[in-house]
Image 1 (cartoon, rainbow, N blue to C red):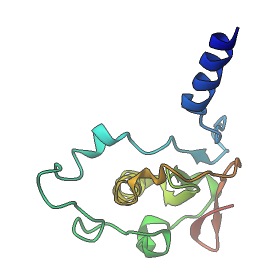
Image 2 (image 1 turned 180 degrees about the vertical axis):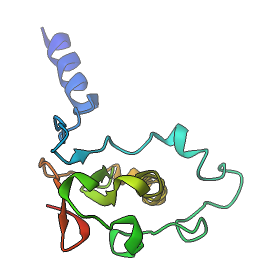
Image 3 (image 1 turned 60 degrees about the horizontal axis):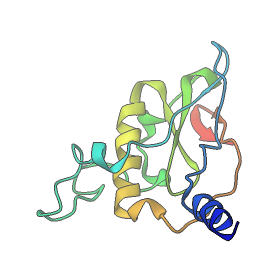
Length: 138
């Protein structure tokens, strides 16, 4: 019985929680993008461990939400905007045209922060919206 309780306890501690930001998209609903790629896919963005670690700046990518170029978040309607999920809690806004650039920025920023492995995030849905011509997260 104790062995079963120990196994259950270990399973609970090692279990990875399911993504908490799930949205059902329709043609009029803004899209919430999936989490950033796993470290194995970031390897195509960042150099290997044997070379100096790439930073957002060294790759010409914004390192924070505030540094996203204006044309990457321009919009006319909520449907023009998406939320790119960060492993380090929260989401980054993007317009649909530049979402791949923002996704790469998020991946490099998260990798530089070691994917915030010890950080607990509040469970909430980040909703992208167009506010005064700029994509934002609500």
